[in-house]
Image (cartoon, rainbow, N blue to C red; front, side):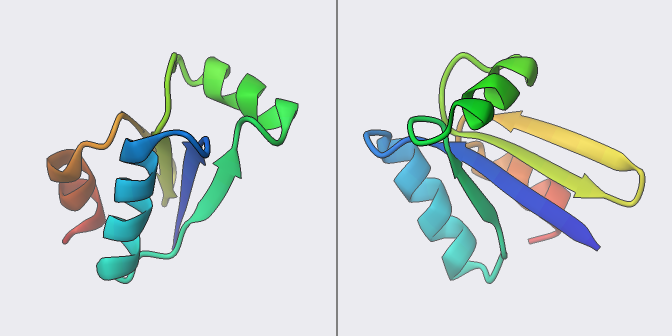
Length: 80
């Protein structure tokens, strides 16, 4: 079982592109808008990110963090 979380904000074109890519590839994800919830902004900072999108993928006993919309890295981790 894996859990995909994407940290976004409304004014972020790469965020919209990544969410669309997830939908096109049948990947379920949870969106966390850092402008609508301060806790999400703190989580983003704790990941070491300075911008959106930032994505965490939790599976088995591992967690991967992808900064920016890196299709190649996401596809490799998600097996697409």
